[in-house]
Amino acid sequence: MDFDQLTLSQAVADLRAGKVTSTALTTEALSRAKAHAELNAFVTLDEAGALKAAAAFDATGDRTKPLGGVPIVIKDNIEVAGLPCSAGTPALKDYVPKADAPVVAKLRAAGAVIIGKTSMHELAFGISGYNTAFKTGAEFGVRNAYDRTLIAGGSSSGTGAALGARIVAGGLGTDTGGSVRGPSTANGIAGLKTTMGLVSRDGVIPLALSFDTVGPMARSVYDVAAMLSVIAGVDPADAATRAGEDRIWTVPNALSALRLAGVPLFLYWVLGPHHDGLAILLLMAAGFTDYLDGKIARRYNQYSRLGQLLDPAADRLYIAATLVALVARDGLPLWWAAVLVGRDLLLVPTLPVLKRHGYGPLPVSFLGKAATFNLLYAFPMLLAAIPGRDDWLATVFRPLGWAFATWGSVLYVWAGVLYVVQVRQLVLADRDVGLPA
Figure 1: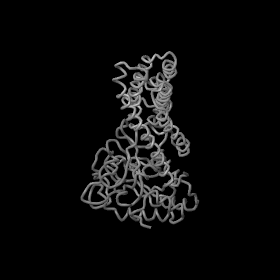
Figure 2: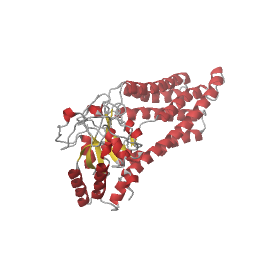
Figure 3: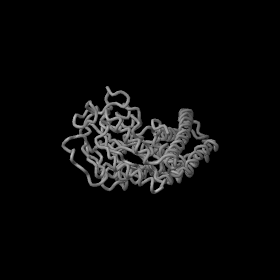
Figure 4: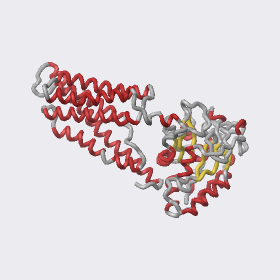
């Protein structure tokens, strides 16, 4: 086995296939950690605990756990039961937590073997990893995995160096202003600053709670995604993870509800008394509020699970209602409408697939938003240029409407293709770490 090329996903696959034992992987990781003492990557090596956990995994024969038997490392500001948690400062060098942080507990439950705590910039307040309080080599500061004369970046310095030096295949860092991204870049690995509220920060010594996040670090993006799928989730002890869980009364939700209420009125005006002017004004208002609710949600942190359902539902219903109206009044070819509706129908089977893997519907992408915005621009113009109308408005809006409709339709279909690609990538990432497809 080429340990230098071994990714987390491949390690899980080899463990499941019986090609290697967790004890062998853990022993090799500990040996490499000692051999690379000059990196100053570790504050604590838990050799006895790691080998005990590896042997327990080998003895059970349980190969269903997504990270089963794979050795990993944890940044030293994240609590691991029974191991010192100094956050890189001598003031906390004797602090030994009695319980795991929720993210660590999730990794253990997924079968990961923790070999030790990694060094960091003091209190995570710096980007160099230069720390005079903790060292195992001749020089001070965590050294770069590829060039010992260079820094490893910070503040998740030790995790970055340990992965770059091929000591382990995965680990945790924290990121407030670049502390996962910097070491990942400097040491040639992958890392993710997670969205606020996606991963619990309980049991993490804070730097700035309004920005602090816990992030996975690994040798590949697939492995980062695999670790993220394990550690993400709501934690009652971290209010940030519950921020959008039960929100109902938000401004974006109210705007989406108003848009939904306008759908039957729009259809009545277009198909009944042919009040096209009022219908056009309603569509314009729907397009503006579609832009506005996303802007408000991002600017004022008014995200919610309900909003993630209401906003795309309102968009789809307006598109469907307008397509019905335009086709009924010969303003749009039936085949064109069928392509747009077919795109949505083709995405329906992805929902049970996502649910089976523990995901909800994926967020609407910016490309999808741009497509919807173009279509909502096009539809009022096409209504103004409905066959039978030959006034100056029809003359002006007909070419503009078809331009927006063409561009919006292309983007809409392409956004659907990318959605399927995203779902496929998530499924493959889970499959690589041994989860059922």
